[in-house]
Image 1 (spheres, rainbow, N blue to C red):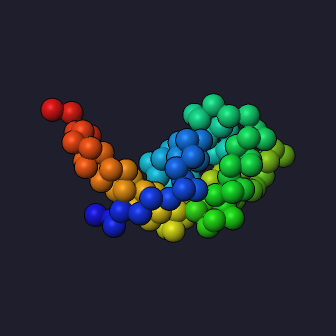
Image 2: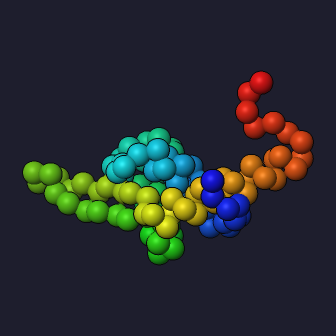
Length: 103
């Protein structure tokens, strides 16, 4: 289990949604992330840039035929930060006496 560490960068709702989605996959296409999180291209691009600058995601751009394709992956540092953030949230919820697991 990861040591709890609250991460302000990941905690923003949009970035938390992106990182959680990427934590469940090896690679995800830009369009899949955009559609899953419900963002515009420019809004997702801005969020991915913020996460990439922090070292939390890797962005890969390539062409499939004549069409550009952007894929995104959570880096090991991003995965660790996400796991620590989730552990911190679980710790906060546990201290409040709220069960995070269904009974």
